Length: 83
Image (cartoon, rainbow, N blue to C red; front, side, top):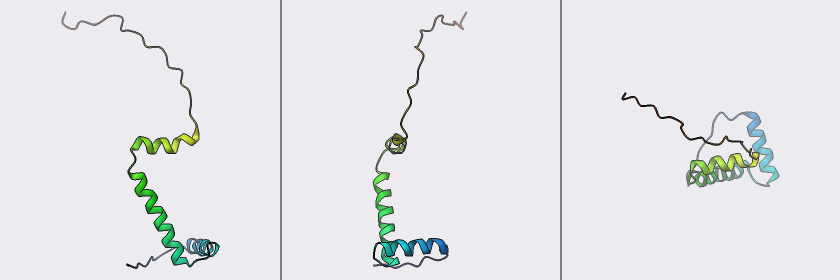
C-alpha cells in the first residue's frame, strides 16, 4: 500500500478531524482514510449519471413550480421575400 503526507492543514481542520476520529473510536489516519474512500466512491458513482440526472437529483428536494404557458398560435401571414 502507498502512503502519503498532507502538509499545510489548517489547525481547525486538524482539530475537527481529531474530534471526529475520537467520536468514531479510531485514529486520525483511519478517519482520514475513511473520509477519502467515501468521498471518492460517491464521486465515481455520480460521474456515471447523465448531467440531467445529476441536476434533477440536486434540484428535486427544492420542489418545483408550475408555469402558465400561453397557447401557441399559428403564423398568420407568411412573408414573401421574392416579390
